[in-house]
Image 1 (cartoon, rainbow, N blue to C red):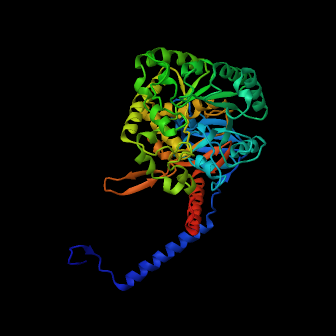
Image 2: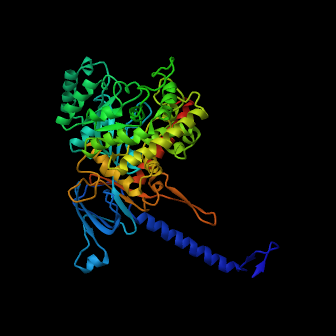
Image 3: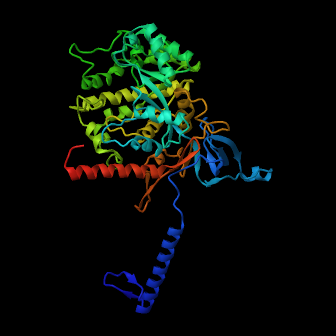
Length: 536
């Protein structure tokens, strides 16, 4: 052995030994390269298969039951055919391992139902490839999405029709809810509303999205809800400040809404010394900066005793009857509590298209781009709202109310797919147990969007399954497309990805391949932007 002046020890190799080591390394590299060439690349999508088997995983079934494993899950075409426990005890009692056309060896992995996002928008337009949003959702384990649309020519409508026509589409299942807005005079009357609902049912829509007047006129909303119920359709309501009078959240739920989106209308339902929020005489709902500043302060006026009493009791009675579900969409409002955090989210540079980032800059012409002069006082007001709203939703759940997961991604730095996983984290902050969160994202969301054969892993149900290499119950961050960073005590950083496969109707989709495709789209868009010197 010889020493440097630094005191570090190194072996005293001869030149012949060095050549032998280099030759051995070259042979090893050549063998590795040959193996890589010989090893066929797994396709990004495959199936549905006559018989697909996921072997040896730990099962999180979506009901709230504790995990169990190992299990073998058998999928035939687009449906779950069997779930077999294969512990040593089960095998000793005569159990047998399943086999199939394709077998996914999942020892040490977890399976759970696909996530159902009950509040989404497909986005699109110039500069946005048609497969951009679907691949972001698939890359985050979303297998069903309720999409709000304005007309028959939108991408979501075309994808849904292709799915219903039996085509294999690389996208989540889509539930279509038509916005209740436009210039049709029938929107303003009960009889006219019933006629519109019947027309939309005939056109293949699954429900109606009501946002403000005229849909929130009491006679009109009751007509919409009654006609929709008879036709097996859902009614989602975004109340908004312009709709609190004449209908707050309690009145909207009682009129037959199947879901209420966001937080609007709940605090107002608790008022005892007023009927409307204390707004200035110069307030204009059409000015989004004013609107979001004001609504962030409405919970300061809430009567908490009444909110946890009569308001909660009434909503719980409606929810227990199976008629009403909350879709809070916590995550789309988190940006208002900390704008600097929202702008610097680690995935925006890799996965947000330039045209989308451009839309999120302050603009009077783009919904959600209202941050012209967002202040610490505004963030503090929204912070106070969160400290009251989140635990109240948790109490609603604790007492038997239905709560579903919705992200409302696509506005103000809230990116598709990533926003859905953030919603799970915020439910945990509200007080939900991880098993309750999975149930909200699967079973409860299936109920909310009208998908009775989804949301649970059991025979006969739709084959929408996630295969995850890390335990999501320990850390929902493992579901993020960028993975999760782990740092050893020695300071070594390792980035690990949890979600491996998103299975939609029996079609096995490589979740990471979807996100690599999205990265390429973003890089191509940036390259074009640099080459042309043009704004997105």
